[in-house]
Structure formats: C-alpha cells, structure tokens
Length: 155
Ligand code: HEC
Image 1 (cartoon, rainbow, N blue to C red):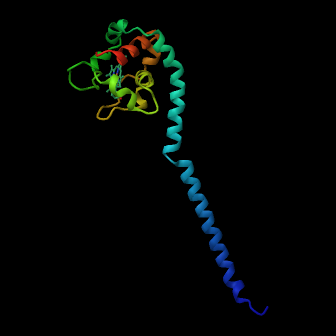
Image 2: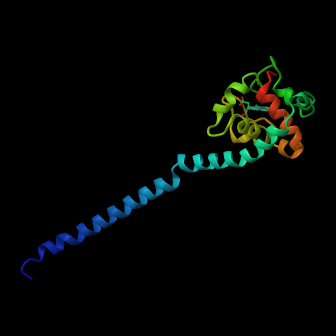
Image 3: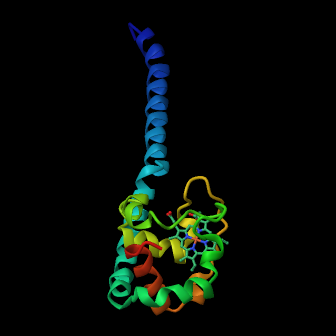
C-alpha cells in the first residue's frame, strides 16, 4: 500500500462514469421508444397496405353515376354543400389534393379513410364534426360508388 490515493479517487470516478453511461443509455432508449415519427410513419404505411386491399376492390366495383342519391341519403351534402357556408371542405379539389393529403396514402386510400374513419386526419381549419359511423351504415357498394364519384368527377 504505497499509494492508496489513486484508489480513493478512482472509486467515485468509476461510479460517476457508470451513472453517466446509465443515464445516456436510458436517454437514447427513451428517444428510440418515444420517437414520434417512427411509429406514426410505420402505422400509416401499415394502414395504407390495409386500405389498398379494400380500395382496389372498391375502385373495380364503384359506379359514379349511382353516387348522387347516396350523398343525399347519407346527408353528405348537408355539410359538403357547394357554395354553402364552410362547415366542411368543398369537394371540388378532392381529385387534385387527395393524393398529397396524407402520404403514403394514395388518393383512393385517403378518400376511403375520410369516409370510414374521418378522425384519422383532420383537414386544417375544420372541426371533427363528420359522422364517425359511415363504415357501419354504408354498404361496400355504396362506399365504392361515392369513392369513385369523389375521385373522378367535379361535384
Ligand atoms: C356533419 C357534417 C358532415 C357530414 C354529414 C359529412 N361530412 Fe365529410 N367532412 C366534414 C368535415 C367537417 C370535414 C373536415 C374535417 C375532417 O377532415 O374530418 C370532412 C371531410 C371530408 C373529406 C375529406 C376532404 C378533404 O378535403 O380532404 C371527405 C372526402 C368527406 N368528408 C366525405 C364525406 C362523405 C362521402 C360524406 C357522406 C357519406 C360526408 N363527408 C359527410 C363534415 C361532414
């Protein structure tokens, strides 16, 4: 024991270093786990895959010429009335903007989601007032007809 001093100094240093490493690991683990972008992006592209299976089928069976009575039956035009007061976004631009609203959703996937799950994405400046129960009330054929109408026509 000629030199006990380094031992006395080393122990606190080791403890400090261990604490620092633990804190750093905990910090980066938290960053990884709670990173807002990763899980959201993954969830959205998973959604896109799920929707794609349905929208491919809907696009094949949809008939825009049958849509107008449905827009009345389900009161869509009560809120989305052309030229009316702005309780809901106008549809004229849907064919142009739908593909860019919520990447990676395609235009068809976005419009489909807007109908069956309106809360998933809110158009800026509008309240979450769209009915949430269309998925249960509309048949697949009806959703298909409205989807094709909104994507292709100038309502
Ligand atoms: C009670 C009012 C109301 C009714 C009824 C309603 N919507 Fe909406 N809709 C909204 C509002 C408000 C928004 C914007 C907020 C949001 O994104 O949910 C919206 C958004 C949308 C969008 C997205 C538009 C965009 O620019 O991105 C589509 C598509 C849509 N609605 C289709 C429909 C269809 C189809 C129906 C009928 C089956 C319907 N809506 C019925 C209020 C309504």
